[in-house]
Length: 358
Ligand SMILES: Cc1ncc(COP(=O)(O)O)c(C=O)c1O
Image 1 (spheres, rainbow, N blue to C red):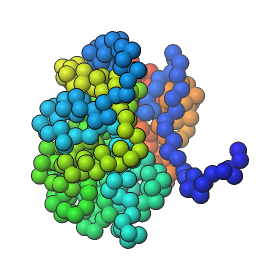
Image 2: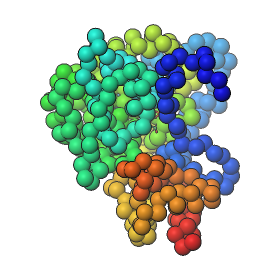
Image 3: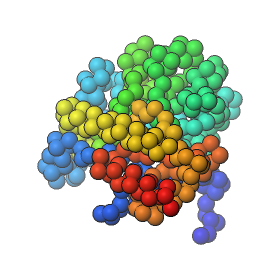
Image 4: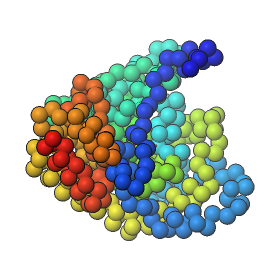
């Protein structure tokens, strides 16, 4: 492909590569941490009743009803809530708003050596200097490794791909230690067992928390994310959004988000089911000699015996059982496996048994 028209920036980029979206009746898809259960029936009702006006007109650029519903849900004011086209978009806007270079002299943004692989991509795109902090031996995030003079700090909690959660108290200690640094806590997986720090936004003006409807609320296809912070940080996100795309959240998604928040019972039931399946899957993998980290997410991070991760990944992939594998030094002995239904996990285990015996 000719790149003669590409800007220098585009030539330099290494874009993020999402997990494969292969489909078909026989595919067991455990590679992108999607929820195996459908969204709340109330969300489906909104989709079924979407009328022509919802499409003909531009959506509310401020997403007021959805932000109000989120504010009420988390006991916040609407001025402390932002919504975006998936939390990926919110992360990108936050990187632009808080971490880009100020007068060519900003210290580096810091994030853990193992964390969401979109962070380095945003840094490349936006020319943000970054520094990776080492993890503890047990793969947990070393909170003390973040420096007092960081240009910003970002980490997922629970972390991806390790699945390990950080207690809220350790995040509060960090917030107190770096009062002049924006700390972005990416809580994409928080509903599966972590301790959210959303309530700390009242106390710490440097805290920004992002969440998503993609995982616990089964709405990855809709692209809906939210962020929580003090009004000044939210205003900064609004300024960047309104300099880029006034309408990132479509009209149907705004209404579907409210419907999802109004069906707490459904969401708690499916989340609880995933946690149960995670417990049985972790035990079954350990029985087969895998090391499995203590997951607080909707996936497990597991290392098969005798360094067979790469081979097992290929075997499973050929059988239509999709899991995630990275060949870098730190990750090459590990597989990240999303939690599906009990039946899907049973198929995974049977495929693993066959793969390990061949
Ligand atoms: C750690 C983390 N943050 C954010 C996201 C983005 O989620 P979404 O853009 O679907 O809200 C993901 C997606 O897998 C993730 O793993």
